[in-house]
View 1: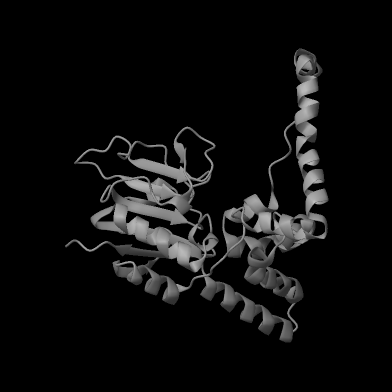
View 2 (view 1 turned 90 degrees about the vertical axis):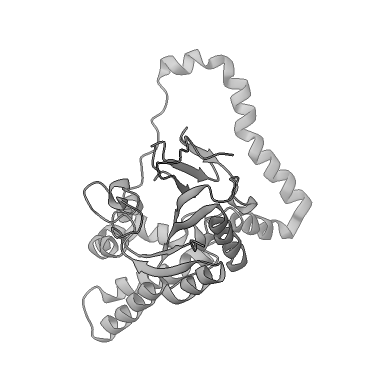
Length: 292
């Protein structure tokens, strides 16, 4: 497939695993496992990238790579290398293991020093280290912490997570119930709705009967394959070595606004329009496909 509206004069960029943060302009192709917008194409990133060699001037993905195993992540980066033109730039954003580990050690020191609120910050850092790797349900213990005690630690969480902390601490409200008029208009759909509403329950009942005592392990395995958990963590050392193993060169650590991609801050992917960093806990790293 040819990238959207590709010409020989304007640069074209690829955004992988974009979620709700994507560029709607014609110069961008946005891919995610599930599409929630016409400008986002649904594609399983485990199946490679559906583009010819040398299709893009830049490839970007943020907080995507850590959801793959080390081997599958290497495969994805090799695909990024393939679809980049010679001299093209890859920009990879991941949770920064070095920064998280440093934050944990600082929290330990604060507890030893008896600093106020240090125990709560220490608990958060333990969750930040392990929860998204070990969790057994959506949101995990980190989500529960945010719901139950996050407000009391808001400045600390905002410092660590940036603008993304707003999403954690202020989840969107549930959709309002339909009006009585709408319910009446949809009354003819009620039998179908009742069947579909209970269909998942019926399926799970059958699975419980078939699997017996193995059913909880099945549920856990199904959740862990849905893409929420982290399967690998990166710092500036192992991410650089992984990029080098794929053939990239000129590997460097950047910040949220600095990039070899021209006009990067104006795309508002790592920062919001007001300049705030979206995910401040990140390691920002770039590299190039060799020109020759």
